[in-house]
Length: 206
Image 1 (cartoon, rainbow, N blue to C red):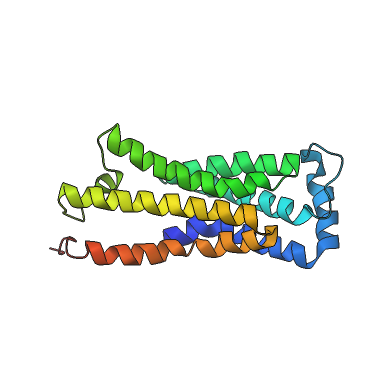
Image 2 (cartoon, rainbow, N blue to C red):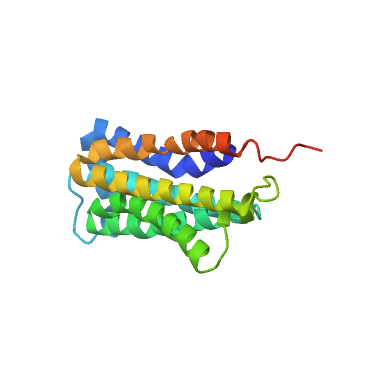
């Protein structure tokens, strides 16, 4: 649970910053131009783009802080966090520089679909099951069950990526920001549902 909250940190700050900026558009517009206009391709940041630009900058800084904290503590940084960090900084930077929210919207779908592709690639080309490698010590399941679980995760990532793309392309910026935040809580629900499939395989404590 603590890891989930830690990973959620940049998204939470993005959500809070965006809503705060929307509630105070004039102040957000002024702040964005004071602090971030030099990072854009234009001479100034528009009133309409100020909330998303501020929120994106906050999320990028939060992601950098996450990585820096783990490096300073000499903690292991898992691959999923590295992938998320790379895409957040790249697409967040493009959003700020070009003042175009398309990039930050697509970022979520790209992350989900990259994970789905990674699970598929590992299964078909590397002949390895990522979930079995990470959880095999705690759960003793036949290979057929591991394969089924692998494809359940692939389906989850693919579906979440498609859902984000649909909302991003068909609804307002504010609606998408709310969806982006609340959709993350689908992961704990998914894990709880998955646990009912795994419980009979979990090894008893010695």
